[in-house]
Image 1 (cartoon, rainbow, N blue to C red):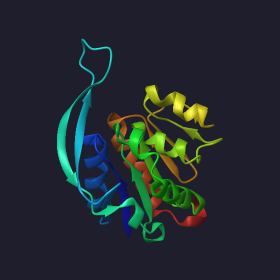
Image 2: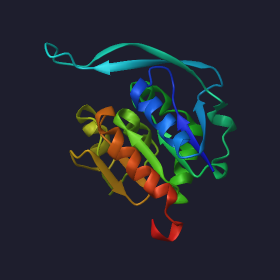
Image 3: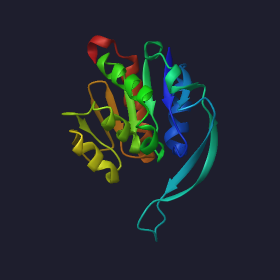
Image 4: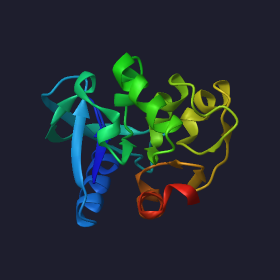
Length: 186
C-alpha cells in the first residue's frame, strides 16, 4: 500500500518527516510529491517566548519522488498534506487539487496539518466538515465552509486534521487508524 506525502518549498520539517517516518514504520511505501520532481527546501517553525509571531529558519532538504501532474490518485491508499508555508503556494496547482478532490470523493484517508488546510480549502472539500488547523489559518477554513474547532485532532469522515506539529502523535494515530479501517467503516 502506498501513501502520498505532499510538500513544496517551505514545508515544515516536523510536519513532513514525522508522518514520513511514522508511515514507513507501519510498512507503507511513502511517495513524496511536489510541483516538480526535484529537491525541496524545508523550514523549521517555532515561536520564541519573546516573539509575537512564528520564527522560520532553514531546515532539511527532501527530494520529491514524483510531480503532482504524474500522480495517479488511484495508486494511493491515502494522502498527507504537510504544513508550513508550502501550501500557501502549491494550493493553486490544478493537478494537486484534482487529486485531493478524487481522494475525498473516493473516501480515501487524507491527513492535513497546519497550513495544509489551505489546500483543502482551495479544493473546496471542507464545506460543512469539522476541521482544525493552526489558528492563523482559521479564516481559510471558515471562509471555505469548514467548521473550525481548536482541538488537537479532528476526524471528519475520511479527513484527519491537526493544528501543528505539536499534535503529530494524535494526528498520525488517527490517520493510521483510518488507513487500516475497512472502507465501509469510514
